[in-house]
Image: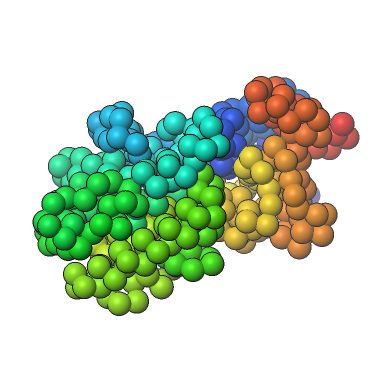
Length: 396
């Protein structure tokens, strides 16, 4: 009797690389490239598939460009007023735009404030105007479905800048346009949303986020994310009060009174609130991106999935990219290894989540700065270990 032919995975191990970027260090594509180099160095017959992923923040556009979408560029206003070029992605049929707030209004555009005392000022004055301009560019290009990923923001302006860029009028008590940022919310007395709504007539709008925070209070935009943008305790309280005032103004302008309580309204310093006010539907950023990147197609017949991000912690397991990849892979019966710079997860956390293992750069290079400065060789070494495992060899 002729024995059955070996399965493709037995003859040629298939690995799916689906990492997020390591914030402040390397992009998702660079992480995947280094891991791939390492795997092929010890398992040269491996079939390595790369699916860069993101959860709505930095790297979201890169992820869909890798899936075949087309790059477009627009000149927009940065979070503190300086103009710069921002890339967005257009579907191959030209009907859908994927926009990344981080590319127009993100902290990564200028980095952290150079002095600690500059933080509160930057947190107060940052604007979401550039994201609205990016949306306008996509509309001008003929797109009628807009997906806006809102992670990595610098702003806490409730999306007021975004709305004005789309034509809304935000005026003070004397009928003058208000300044950008939180001071504008504090001065706003009248809001006319109709021009922005008319701009989006017959447009399907999606808010893609990895957080479900509502707008206000101890789990709101100011309290949770303000400190990441440089806000001290006094500034956090000021932002929260300004966002509460802004929410009331939106209600007065005809928006639903529960808008500030909805999932995602607190995303990106309240930009989520503005998008919901324009009729956006909330979607999990990672779930949406995994669908667009067709991860499920690549999982068929895979022997191993490798995902990860710069730091694994409790947040990772709730809506971040590695958690989304893990869920899809486990449903397909494929083991998942996470690769990261550092991990705060305990062995019990890892096991309970369902990871087959976690590898960190700090295991290879204890010096944190060394990991940040030159992660590619370290990732390649981890990839080489994974390649040995694929061939049944002991790893280092």
